[in-house]
Length: 111
Length: 123
Image 1 (spheres, each protein chain N blue to C red):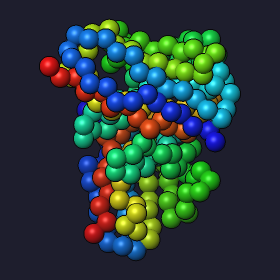
Image 2 (cartoon, rainbow over the protein chains, first blue to last red):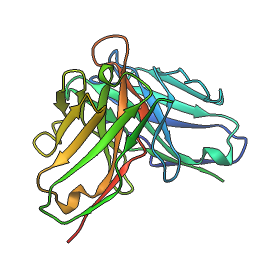
Image 3 (cartoon, rainbow over the protein chains, first blue to last red):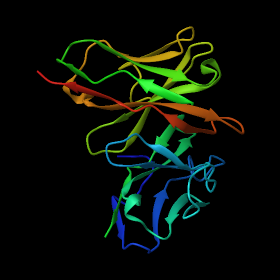
Image 4 (spheres, helix red, strand yellow):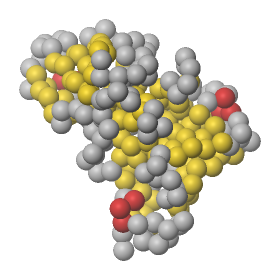
């Protein structure tokens, strides 16, 4: 059972917009600690996609965006492409557990 | 190029010991934390522990404390994850990741990842 909760799967047609939620509590996302998102393409290592809630590393298209509010965060992907099929993981820090924590991951399928 | 390169896949029997490695290239290895992350088949990511190669200070997730040992050799730019007695339930992909520190406290993101080391434990 992951500390952060994500939906197991989401799907969308090419060109559409999808969002992936990440729900925590008052010890992690609900604190000062930022949320980061990672993209894991099939058979590969995770890659930093969004950092500090809503910032993109160099090279990440602006189709990807993040937000945080209260004890939840979201990743939005617009203009879906087949190449976006991957697992997406959220991550923060939990001050009660004194641990960096992840969500269970969400599998995105492009129909 | 900044990268982390991990050692190759391992197949072990229950009860055996194992040490896998993660070597840093292209940056000052002693100035960034290195974390180990487990991914069991079909599951999410789990932080296991972190080491600061500059002074070898390590911290562990409560879930992994006492189950693994994390060390580093700053002269070789390598971090290690080791087990003294493997179990079948240790079968997983293990990633090392560089934790980039910013802001204050424990604000860190995993900005660089190794390619992963698959560990299979089976009799």
